[in-house]
Image 1: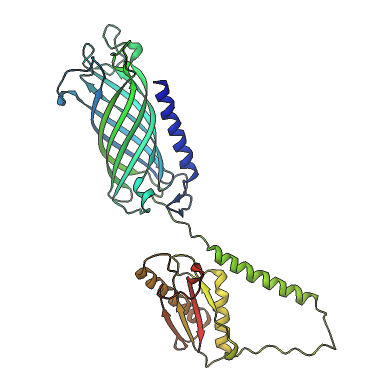
Image 2 (image 1 turned 45 degrees about the vertical axis):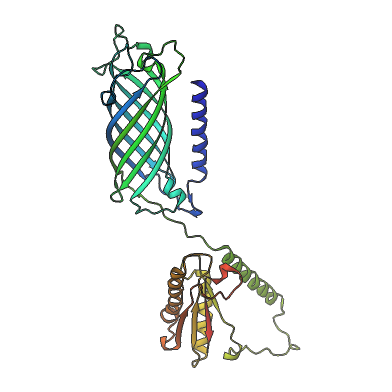
Length: 384
C-alpha cells in the first residue's frame, strides 16, 4: 500500500507541475490570463456505489443488493482550456461489504483532483462545445460511520480504529454544457483505500479495497468569466520588418545631424518630386488570422494616400492575399477580401481619397507573391 500511495502521489505532483507550465497554452495557442475570480464553478450530484472487498471475506450477495448510494458537492476552477482542479466533499452508504461484519455502513469523505480536458487538448478550444470528456486523478480521505451517522460503537464488529483511510481517486467526467454557466455531468469514479476500512481483512494477504461510484448532477458557474480569450500575438517577421525600418530611419537622422548647417560650396538640393513613374508598390502586412491594420503598418497607407493627393489622376488597385500554410482555401479567400476592404476603407475614411480612385481584388491563398510564407498575409498597393 505504501508503494502504491507513493506512485499515485508522485503522478499527481507531476501532472500538477505540467498544468502550471502550460496553463495558458492549448494546441499552440496562447490565451490571456484570466482574473483570479474567473472560471470557478460548483456542482451538486448523487448516484450509486459498489464497494469491492477482495478475498474470502467478499460478501455473497446479488449485484443489486450490493449497490449503495452517494452524494457529492464540488467546487472547482479551470486554470486553462486544458487543465483544472477541484475539491469534492462526498458521502454515502455502502451495503454488503464483507461476510462476518456489519453489512451496511455510512461514510463521509473528500478529495482534491487535477482535471484534464481531453477534447480541448487533442482538438481545439471551443467555449460553445456541448460535450467534454474530462479524466481526473486525486487524493482524499474517508471516515466510516454507523447507521446513525455517528462514530462506530466499539461493541460492533466495525472496529473504531479501522474506520478511516486515505483514498486514491481516478475517474472520468462526461460534461454536457447547456449554457455558458450551466452544465450537466455524469461521473464514473474509482477509489482505492485500505482493506481494513470495512473491518475485514485484518491480518490477510490483501492490501486494499476499492469502490466504484457513478454520479450525475448539475454544475453552475460562480460568476466571473467562464471562458478563455486567445491572445493576439504580433508576427515576428512583422516585428523584424518594423525594426529594420526604425533602424534605417535612425541612420538617416544621424547622417542628417552630422551635416553642416550651411555649405555654400554644396550644390542646391531640390526636394524630390513624387511622380507616378517612380512609385514603388506599398505593402500592408497582417497578423495571422487578422484583417486589422496594425499601427506600425499604417505608414504604408499614409504614404499611398500622400502620393495620390500629389497625383490627382492616379488610381490604386489593392490586392490582398493569405498565406497557404494556415486555414482552408475557402476561409483564406474570405480573409483576403476582408484585408483588401480594410485597406480601402482606411484610404477613404482616414485620408479622404475618393472611392472612385480605388479598386480592390483578393486572391486568398491561390497566389503567393512572396517565397516567405508569413509575408503573404499582405495587401499590396498597385498604382495605375
